Amino acid sequence: MYKWILFLLLVSTNVNAQTKYYLTADRVFDGEQMRPGWAVVVEGNKIVAAGLGLSVPTGAVKINYPGATIMPGLIEGHSHLFLYPYNITDWNTQVLKETDAYRTIRATVHAKQTLMAGFTTTRDLGTEGAGYADVALKRAIDEGMVPGPRMLVSGRAIVTTGSYGPSGYDYDQQLMLGAETADGYMILKVVRDQIGKGADFIKIYADYHWGPGKEDRPTFTLEELKMANEAATSSGRYFVSHASSKDAIRRAVLAGAETIEHGDHMDAETGRLMKEHGVTYFPTLAASEKVTQYRGWKKGVDPEPKNITEKKQSFKAAMESGVTIGMGGDVGVYPHGENVIEMELMVEYGMKPVDVLKAATSVNAKALHMEQQVGMLKPGMLADIIIVGGDPSIQISVIRQVKFVMKDGVVYRQEK
Ligand SMILES: [Zn+2]
Image (cartoon, rainbow, N blue to C red; front, side, top):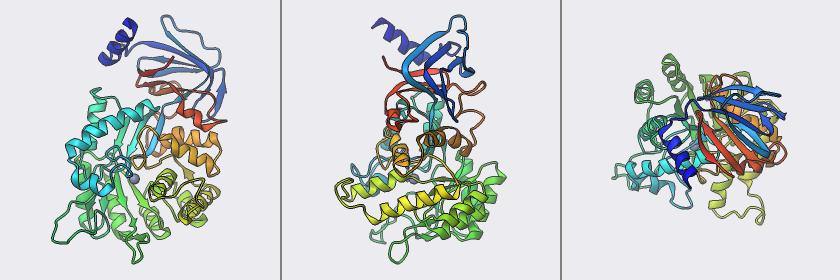
């Protein structure tokens, strides 16, 4: 009991910032490959050594988990910390009826759940009606006020007039939208305004399911997207795009989007185009599966719905095209802390577990422009380290057995 209290004090006051740690398990996944028998040495908030036969520094705290794997803190590539599962409360209600204050309090809980599940960094792709509360949450986490992952935030995100929701209400009502509208030259002003208010990057919806039959159709023109890109890159930011249709993926890529989100209708040709332009693809398999399940699909019991079959085909086409694939599941559609679902589905849909581990660490770090800080266990990197039971390169689900979580050299979780 006394030890536990002391541990909490150390964590909460951050006085252990210069503590040295000597971490061992059966193996280390360094962000690229499995390294049997390696150790990792941490000093303060940095990794100072990782390799075989390292000596234990004087005074180091020894952490050893037999049978387990030491890994870089995982990186969620596509989250919405201000949303929670739509089978609990539908999206329209969350956006329209819940106050930003309530949603922010919830988001602090979601942030803690994310960190405790071993995800020490997240890229959050829009508050969906909660303004710039993500900028505030990021600050509170960085200041150590609430536990949570490192955040890269996009604020409100950008859509065209007429395309986005909530929709279907009496037009006499002036409803807020889940994102900010911009059309024509206005997109320059909106991008700059979002950057000024704290967006780390710009999220744009290059298409939406607003076609005559509710199919995905492009929203912005190529020219509009190019203007957004110029405004974003001039300031040292970049833009990423929601895009499911081939036309929208093409426009977004040609305009300079760095990542494509969802890509439900992607094929070999669009995959190749993305590869040529150095774009990273975030498939959000988990969002597709969960939304379909919320509509009544019983996986493993009912026949596979067409949209899921198509999603599997598009993921296969993406893999064959050689485009870089990141790990981002659109978590928030499903519970925060269950981020691993996307990793499990990537394996189920045909990716090798070790490639999924890379996607969730070194590949995502690069896509987020954070490869100098996180995503690898090597000297000079920030001490974002987790330990999971078993070998996730054999069985991806052992990522669920989180034994230890360290972020920035501070221990947040330590199981027996
Ligand atoms: Zn999303």
